[in-house]
Image (cartoon, rainbow, N blue to C red; front, top):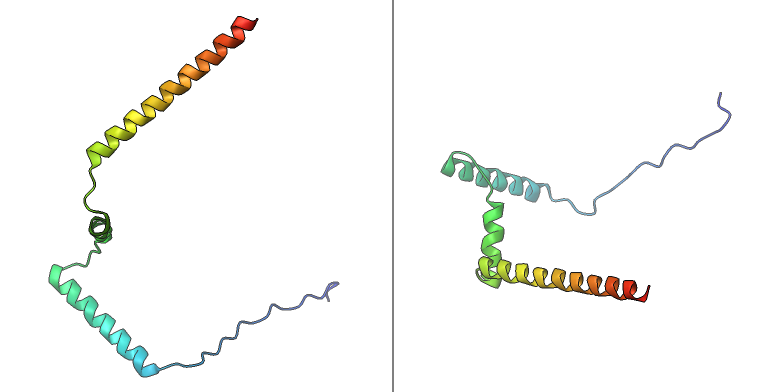
Length: 99
């Protein structure tokens, strides 16, 4: 006997509109055979995701000039920090001179 009646949650009922069992079976067999072929070639299947991203990036944007980009960004950050230090010192000196 319960003081509060709670309703049961609604059940999920999904009825697929179209299901082709033969196509599903064919896709599974093709996938299984492709996996077998890949593992037989190298002995063990190892995905090369990092290499794929790198190749695709180089195909779209070309090879990166890492050393030049890093040195330019370091110099830009150094100039920005130096500018901020100069501005802060100037503001502190102007405030102290008024006192």
